[in-house]
Structures are given as structure tokens and as C-alpha cells.
View 1 (cartoon, one colour):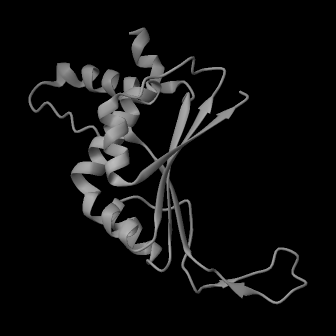
View 2 (cartoon, helix red, strand yellow):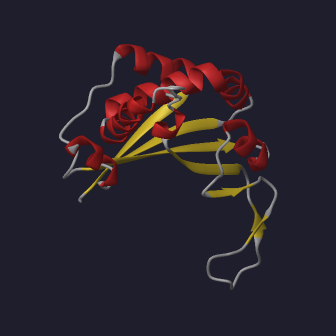
Length: 166
């Protein structure tokens, strides 16, 4: 059962979805994506100055950022087959440890569930980015298949990779 222990290790990467838009309500994005934002604000909302010395202004655009958990999207229920629960756990652990699988699952989910919203964001002048934070010490490489890359491109999602020194 060594493989089940993979799920307790710290993840080798973190995926986050970021949306910038001229005016969309961040609460609507949270509802549509069924994910609570880690950080968000709406265009036109008051913005405090960092120094506190100058008068506050307003946000020029909406900003929404949420962490993704592709393993939670796996719907692998096996009714009446409790012996297959271990398989479900192993597959979830594999998704959290394989960046290629996580990207593929993300592309499929965005295409199947959110294509219309992503198209709307783009047509209204917004930008969507999938942020991929990688720990250089734990990820030795990954593959991005042409199909996955094409899906992100068709959806208008920019992939942004950040390598950390861990």
C-alpha cells in the first residue's frame, strides 16, 4: 500500500485559475466555476492605497484567482464495489502527482463545462490564465500533449509556468 501514501506528500505543483475582466462580477465566476476565489475584487470597487498616504482609487478591472484541485473532479464511484475504493484513491493520488494528467483533466473539464463562459470572457475583453507553480526539486519534467495544448488555445486560456526553488 505504498502508493496510497502519495496523497499525503506535499504536491509537486499547484494549479490556479486567474481571470481578469473589464466588469464581470467575481461572485458570478465563483458560481460558474463552482470554486471559491482565494482573492478577488470587482471593477469599480474602492481600492486602498498601499501607503495610506494618497486617496484611494477604484479597481480598473475585475480580478479573480482560485486554486484548482483536479483530483476532486474525478467522479469514480463504484457502487456496491467497496474493494475499488483503493483504485479511486490511487487515481486521485496520481492526478495530484502527475502534472500532465492534471493539465489534461483541467483542459477536459474547462472544455466540457465552461467553454461558453470562457468564450464570453474573451469576447468581452477579459483574459484567463492557468497558473502552474512547479517545485523544481520535485518535478523533473512533464508532457503537454498537442490535444491538451490545442484545447487550452481554443478556450483562450494562457498557460503560465512558475518554477519555485523548493
